Length: 90
Image 1 (cartoon, rainbow, N blue to C red):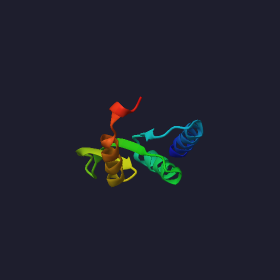
Image 2: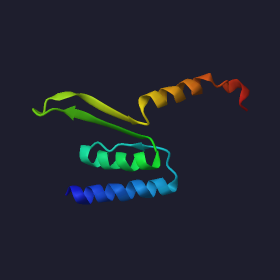
Image 3: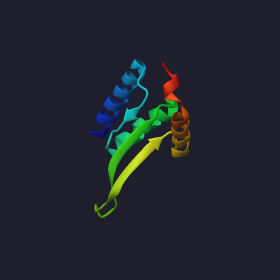
Image 4: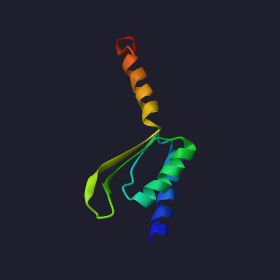
């Protein structure tokens, strides 16, 4: 089952990249998300994956949020965007 789903997800992400997407949200399934993250890392496209983090006893521990590029890079970009004087842009 995973092979088909992983293969389908890979094909879908590659098709979307060919269309010029600038980021990927998801997927939630951990195994598939790892494959999508690998593709995004190679082509340097941001990937945001949010899923519930379960430990061995299947007790919820919270929500995991994976951001690519690294959070420090995202914060630098955020700071630069805040510095823009939007009143001067017409």
